[in-house]
Image 1 (tube, protein in one colour):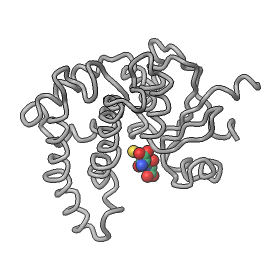
Image 2: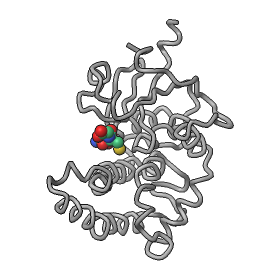
Image 3: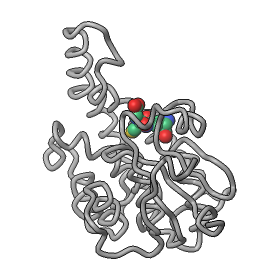
Image 4: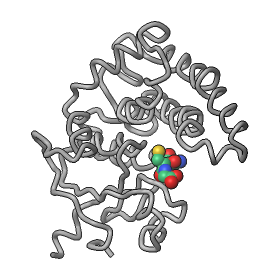
Length: 230
Ligand SMILES: N[C@@H](CCC(=O)N[C@@H](CS)C(=O)NCC(=O)O)C(=O)O
């Protein structure tokens, strides 16, 4: 039981930005568990103790409790430096990755928010429709334009291979594929989605979200419930 408690846990809700952290954990290859939440359990007192903001992802390990995707992914990425998941602080590569992560977790993430929770951006239905329309036709395409420019000659965001930035981007940006014509307007980003879809970490995270038994995993030690953890 004590050994069990030392295995890190990632708290997630399917379909959210927590996807990238699941991908990164799978890449890392160290033992981890997952705790699936929903719109109700995320508001429970037990979870609010972990993250008073009532948001996912949260990562609980022997090093403590971490919220915020950028912090969680840099933490996991540091553990996976030998795998090239992230870069050593103090290097140009780290600074660039950090810059990309900052853009993704702020400008990009917040641009997509209104399309998922329009009620949080405006009160009346008409005002909400306007907010969603502006997000889909102006703000999000502008952010994707920047992403398209950031895609490097290797087809990734921060290196000659996928890093935590690519894992996070995939999880957040997939929602926008429904109303953005990637092939026509953002061909490098369209190609990114096609290639990254078959990455083992992405296949694993997708199976988890879809509640299908993952075909393979290096470190996954199973799902736990919130009540088992408190
Ligand atoms: N700044 C936070 C944002 C986290 C966030 O907004 N998470 C969303 C999912 S993408 C969430 O938990 N939504 C649940 C809710 O707001 O009820 C981060 O980067 O991790």
